Image 1 (tube, helix red, strand yellow):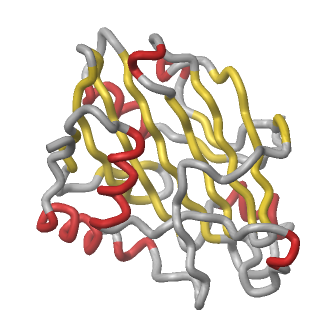
Image 2 (cartoon, helix red, strand yellow; image 1 turned 120 degrees about the horizontal axis):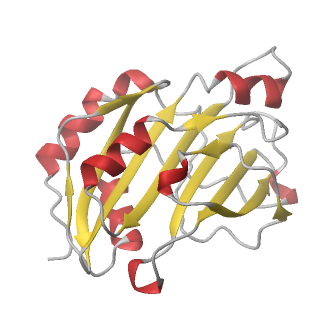
Length: 212
């Protein structure tokens, strides 16, 4: 078995995070590790402290109802997988023209969603989902931890129906309905522990992609 993911643990975690919001109208969103070709480089809107790894590339994926940004961090080698910060901003599901492109794909975290994401992010090693949540400056987030070739690994996720203030201002100019915001973080680092990685994720910072 590749993952240690119990339905009870994930269900409890999903309930504990339910205060982060409900679904987005009738919009059906699904997370996918592949969202098509990125539109090009962009200024990062999600950051971790430098100890998580230097930001080496930021790619923007534009969609009719919002956008996704993938920030690629320097890693310890290909055998440990790609360390990535993925930010999803669902800004306009009610007025999107889907004839212009595919919808943004991101699921509210639940047992099925996280199990599938762990399979994609860590296809060869076991990850343990914590039944408890941690908290950053935006609210509670869930996480799973494990090891790969001697490196500590962490996968974390957060869903914010009310958005995050810097992104709200950037997307809607400080007025209107705040955009739903979600992120996923994958880290594997040698010479550290998952608890240290967790401490880095607690310091996640979101900002306008146009910020200096």
